Length: 112
Length: 115
Image 1 (cartoon, each protein chain N blue to C red):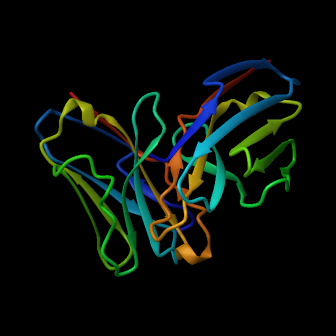
Image 2: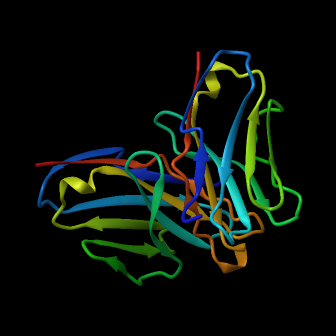
């Protein structure tokens, strides 16, 4: 059965800290791995990773994929209170449907 | 529209009643998905529509759940004879043709509470 596992489940840090969120996966076919940020209800897209070892970066956020070890990390440097959210990792298996398989998410709380 | 629009944003219903949830995808997006997010859980795939093809209903949890997409745009998810375990946030997403990549854009969801 395809699955995505995220860790930690929750994390509390102070502004300015650096955090690393983890995502491991087991899927029969792999197309891409995606990260989303969910602040209230609507998950918003952050990154899509398809190839190993190529870092995607956007401001203070960055992510990398390891297809050999089947995991990805999302790094946030110099955290701000606005980074507080649930971060979701999802895998897009190959195939016609393109449904995403999601992990349960990591709840990040950034305290002032 | 500019983004995926869902209505209502909140729905409270009594056990046994039927509910309809609406999703209006991003203009030009041919693929539409419904997911369910229960408290403390990840998003669970329910159903997928692509153009005029037969939908992928493999994620629907029971025959009380159904969905349709009229004219290749707006979709309605219907839950008949609601149960308390149906309480969750129902999220809709749309994307370009799957050949264009798997990035899905989500609406704000409908929070369903079954009393």
